[in-house]
Structures are given as structure tokens and as C-alpha cells.
Length: 78
Image 1 (cartoon, rainbow, N blue to C red):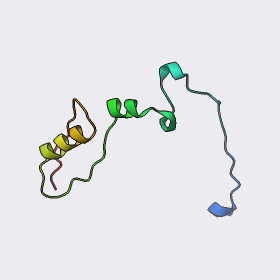
Image 2: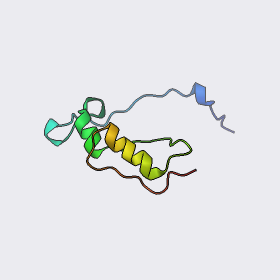
Image 3: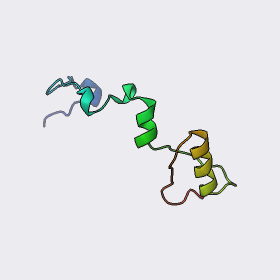
């Protein structure tokens, strides 16, 4: 019977199919994306504290970040 190798005994290598770069006309690398694009197309993952309503927190985010529009998906209530 053939012995099964332990995971740490297996020799591994990285295989790269192709090296490509992002054309700046079609977007940015996430780490190079301007804050304006994060604000326009982004999502804020917010851990809402107990007390204020979802609508209140959304209004605070709009005011703090000077946004025209903001919303929340579903309920933020615990």
C-alpha cells in the first residue's frame, strides 16, 4: 500500500498563468484607489452601537463624510 505524505512533507510551488497590469483608464488597484472613488462606490461596514436607530446612524455618516446620499441594507438592529 502506498504511503500518503504528510501535508508539511509535500513540496509546493506557485504557478502564475499570466502577469497582467490594470489599465488606469478602467480602474485602479485597490491600494491606489482615490478616496473619492471609495466614497462614491464603497461600502462602510459599521458595527452600530445599541441605542440610535439605523436611520440616525445613516444620517450621522452622511453628515460626517459630507455625502449627498447614503443608505443601509436591511436592519442594523441587534
